[in-house]
Image 1: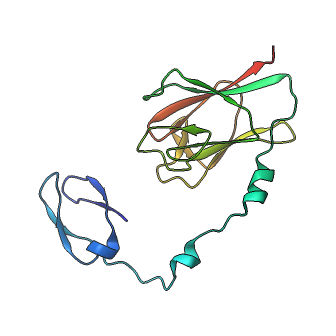
Image 2 (image 1 turned 180 degrees about the horizontal axis):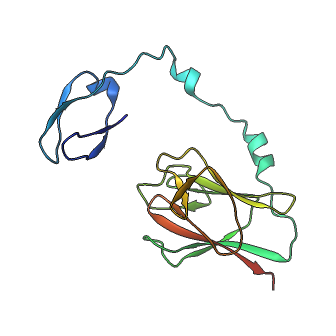
Length: 167
């Protein structure tokens, strides 16, 4: 659970099962505030865990069909600034811990967003229910059609999608 200090507006990720219903001291401004108690969900971890069939997942991530176009992602800002990564699969995942492009950005979710190249030639950017969102022109998006030189932001990292002619 993310809580916000009422005095200094600092945000903290707090385990409500440990601190729920208790008073805590803000490390930034020393204000004292209460952490809301965890609401009973009645769900077990098994109820909230998604089971994925690896075979089905592998079938979804197919290699790109032959084309006269080549796709790439350019990192415009952050520690990996200047790097260009080729998009060689129909689903290209961007994240902090998992994916084809792993960004060392604490504002990026483990699986943040993905570029999906569809069979009809369309290319889509999809947010994967990330905590901090995926942005295009300062607007939070859930899905966005991509074109050559489309810039978008994941966490604090600015990225650009490029389409070039195959040599």
